[in-house]
Length: 79
Image 1 (tube, rainbow, N blue to C red):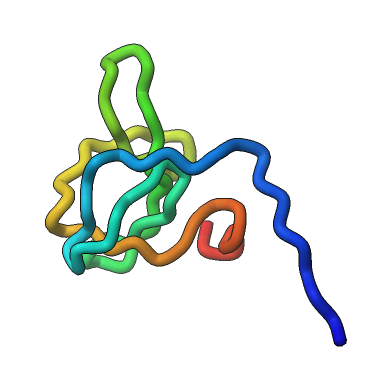
Image 2 (cartoon, helix red, strand yellow):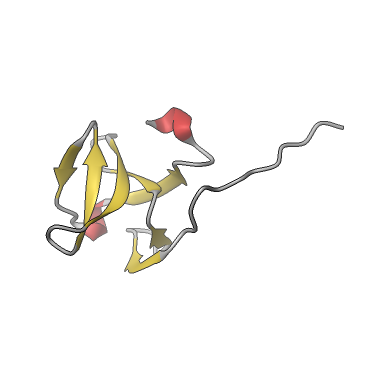
């Protein structure tokens, strides 16, 4: 019986935000916008705010538009 053990290199921390479906958003979650683009939820230290990262570009975060679809540890294929 095959199984996989998941090791996370850092803990998930709740952002205090919820996606358009009411699901809690954590740092390192992968979210999808209405156009089907995927982003990683990150903390931007320089501005002390939550941002979305895609191909090393930072974006603002309009929470009601996004849906959590996974995270970087369990779903790296989405990136």
